[in-house]
Length: 337
Image (tube, rainbow, N blue to C red):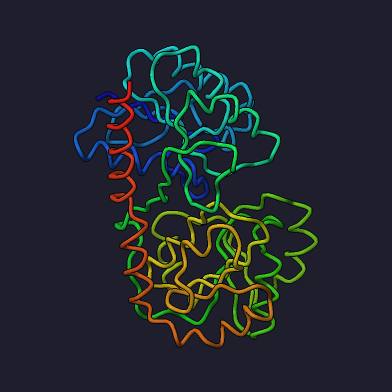
């Protein structure tokens, strides 16, 4: 079976720091290649894979000031679709645009829906309901008028996230700085509990950062260190007393939640979206509803055993489990065609 994995081209695959969709496409490609499957990863030319790499875009458009996002996306998607006949399965991690090719090619397509950026994109998914096999990344993130082939949780590479039994004295906010992700709320939790907070991630909303985040950064109690990747990411997650995840939207998954727990770090999250599927309440963290409840949870962190957090993530959110689930889906889809 020849499989094409279509990654986004905003960032390199795997990303140097931010880029969750690219990360999952990369983890899947590596896992499939390790199983001996014939995998071609369609990603930027500077991407890294043990499988076959095919590219038409030199670098991610978020990392190349001369790149035009729409041009790169158009070139990248069409580059794969022009070769569609060479593959038995196309696995799309690129949102809704590749769906528009699905009636023009014979190769069956799987699309992992990594979240809906807006209800306005739903008509595209609805139009290709009968042609594309949709996969959700949590049961919470399913549109009622779409048909799904499976739910497959995102899987992390355990080798990238070491278990840390002895944390330091800081709380951590790890994610893009945007109102949806609750950076300001994380700061308020730290101030309420008089704890040190480290903020790590890209600034996705500059106005929000300047108004709601930057005024609180004193480099003592509240510290912002920018985007973090590689070994530093594992160390930062593992040494935290807790990951604060006070989201204000129905998050489809929350990769940092799984990564933190794998390191042994409990997660305090607002109870929205997929959080009840990721966190075992009062065993691997706390599901709360507001800043006051989150602040109380910080004081109860001694109730959580870090080994329980690690075992929970190891049992549910590994790349190996993700690869097994997708491999079974590929076989099923191939038989039906």
